[in-house]
Image (tube, rainbow, N blue to C red):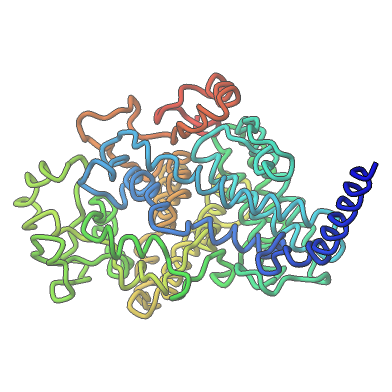
Length: 516
């Protein structure tokens, strides 16, 4: 009995001591520094920033694929840089939009939309986030085809880590619906987020961006569903499109947040990438003043270390684009006929103008692109505007846009007007006009890799000669999409297999729904 009393006494003493130690335990062990939740406006900004990647390696999807496919920028080197230059699959670079967007952009933008849904005072943030979400998924589905859409980004919200893949047709119809609803619902009389990095909370600019993005989405469907395309073109025009370059959707850069494509090409990859001959030749042969703003050549350079300012020239007459179809050994066959001394002697993108790492903006949707798409819509009688005027407006706007890269990229008003007068829209046949419009869209979209790749497949222009590099891994003339990452075949096998069975083989040749 005595032992039992001692035991109970000790137990009570222990409980009392533990209770004393536990006092203030939760407060003491609560991290008051690290956030437990993020505000939707911060998440939306983060999504916008991540869309153009947070390091140079993400941009290898464009340097390896989109740029060489549309023959604007190319490298003669293989191995880790191979892709569209050789028409082969690069397991590291083909998935870079997928991995960056789903892990970062989609995660943030889906969460921002869900957090602001039905929240009083957040209607403008909610609808702006819906517009950026539509933009994000357009890039993903244009690149890969059928993708996780309705269930995407729900890993944290719903613990869904194996999302279903939706068909591109269904995705596009929902994107158009979202853009229509979100753009119309934006309301300048309601609270705004002044910290919004795209437009500083300017609701009118967000509206014009939303409707201009709707026009872009509608025009994707010209081959596969022209009736639906026409319907949404009409809605976009009625809603109100971008009115000037002041409405451009662009990410601005500073020394604190640099242009990562510029950073990568200005440093690590400076000696590896060159302007492709089809692009340089088109600009030079048409006396296009934009060539002087875009290109630089280090004349006589025999190595990367010799690409120094003392050799630099921006004179259009001295620019030499790198021909397609060669590697770093066989390219030597072209030196004599092209008047260069080495592969390092070809023209490159100017890192002091359009690739200035702290000045050059990253453009997502522009007034110039919008005017050119509207010119095509008018040519198809889907809009009442004059195609020739809209065409000229698009060219003029892009030349004026170049001034945002700094004074050395600015095109004079006289040069701008001279070029436009010398290149009117030829409407003798619809096909000639379509070629002109979409070739100018090719120039206007320079450095916007995802849009270049998408509109080239949609329109078929510019009329490029297929890359003749031997040993290609495609059966078509051009790469049509990027394959799904290998990781998806491991972690989400059932759903990705269903998508492949519906869409076609997981190869560079398979066409997405709207690319018929």
